[in-house]
Figure 1 (cartoon, one colour):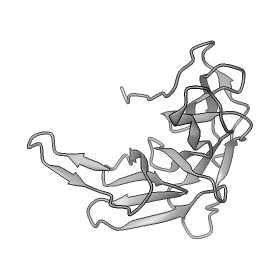
Figure 2: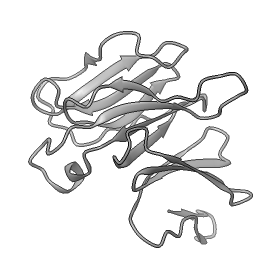
Figure 3: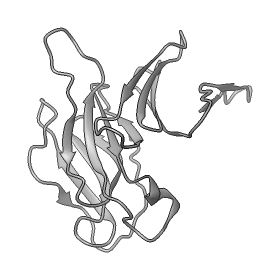
Length: 178
């Protein structure tokens, strides 16, 4: 990952892994940290100090992709599995789960991942609508469409995902703050 200072054009490299590929940089709301994935790891990088924390995939041996930090900085949504999807337009070549992780673990709280959507279909491209609603792309009902899931304060799904589109065949989605 690289950061570019727009006023000067100066580029700063943030990552330097010997193998594999970095995916999906997602800024924390404070602008001081970034979450990204590298192979089967989620990496949280403090920009000021350069220190990072690395977390294994919540699904052992599965790749981690497209982390998305909640607007309040409390949660990180990510995709676990289905690396082939990005490289093929054939659709779902392997199912993927949508997983939620707490961004920080305080004493006495659970840091266990919460599976929001089971790996029964392609589930990808999580994007936060607000601090308690997550949109994503899935082919759970046929072609790739947009779905949303509401979250409880515990991070668990407050119900089944709801379809937001029909026949859209979208690849990714993002949400602007405004």
